[in-house]
Image (cartoon, rainbow, N blue to C red; front, side, top):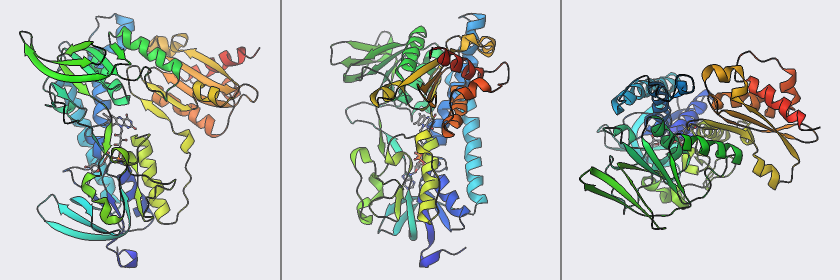
Length: 470
Ligand SMILES: Cc1cc2nc3c(=O)[nH]c(=O)nc-3n(C[C@H](O)[C@H](O)[C@H](O)COP(=O)(O)OP(=O)(O)OC[C@H]3O[C@@H](n4cnc5c(N)ncnc54)[C@H](O)[C@@H]3O)c2cc1C
């Protein structure tokens, strides 16, 4: 295939994570000549190699081996395996990572996308220098449109003595030699909380530290209260509203440990510390200036609604453009950018983007929160259903799960769905479909659900909400 307009490629994508992968495939599906440049030895980005896929697989391994899901039925001492090691957890993660890399490679090859194993940097608005990682040296290529999908890197302040073992980031987690007996998690964002709850389920004594007083400000407050309750049940200590002054490795008779000094004078001592305070856009090596671009705060790139940068034929998608920084939204942004580059109209339902937060228990949400509706002055009512009221909830032993529907007080239109508990990130899509079609909560009353399923929570919550209208 030859590119149009005399360039080497119609589309050159920099970065093979979910954003870049989807952009390249979309261009190929539109009959364009596309190439994908990746500086790592394998494709898949943070998503497959160090972030989404490993963390979700470790979570699954931890839930299974610890017997956590069954404890409500068989008792708090129930375990599938005693003395769980990092090796046990990584066995499952390695298997899934290898498979996902293979699937991603195969998809790229099947769609005729050239994979360029190189670090890319701009030498002009249409020209990119490739520093090959396989010994082929330097080579310049040109493209009509370019997509920057370089993602982010963990933020590692110079004053913290990271050693990848006692003080580590989420990128180092897969290389941990052993599970620590106790862990301090600095930073209670999504990643910090997910790992805090996974380690707690494995019996590690966890302390979470964050300068904010409330966890995950974008999540419905009632759901966060329920999460905090569950975390405390799992012996997680929360030190919120606390600034970290210093993180110091030290050793005494008990062995090597870490001391975290807080501005308030308190100290947290643990066997290890996970530093999880933000991520920085991977733009430093791109020489953006050569293309007439600059990065903004935290290395992120600013884009318009079509994901165009200030140079209209250069797009930026995925984590490198900032919030919401999810694999799911990154893929969609890659698709939309490629469509826009080639003048194809693509529909996007951005306001109906669901969020999945894989803490233990899991959280998922779509639509608006109570806080947002209150601020917007929208009259609404709430319908709730506890998993324990549902036969499936009893069968699986999830006694703390909660599904909450928000609907308009007058029109009864569904406005938001918020779930905490087993299967939340799957269940939420039922609500997402009803929201997309501007359905009312009567849909749930009038619909037959399989029995016994967690989906029945929708019906129970709808009845609860309607009962409140009297
Ligand atoms: C621990 C963790 C857990 C997560 N869990 C979830 C989750 O459960 N659900 C979810 O939706 N999201 C999750 N995320 C977020 C998700 O991983 C990201 O949103 C997603 O990976 C972003 O995709 P991306 O394509 O923008 O970038 P990335 O996946 O970061 O890929 C960027 C790629 O670009 C390459 N690159 C960078 N610079 C260059 C260059 N100059 N030349 C060539 N190649 C370059 C990098 O090597 C990398 O392969 C998680 C993230 C982390 C860290």
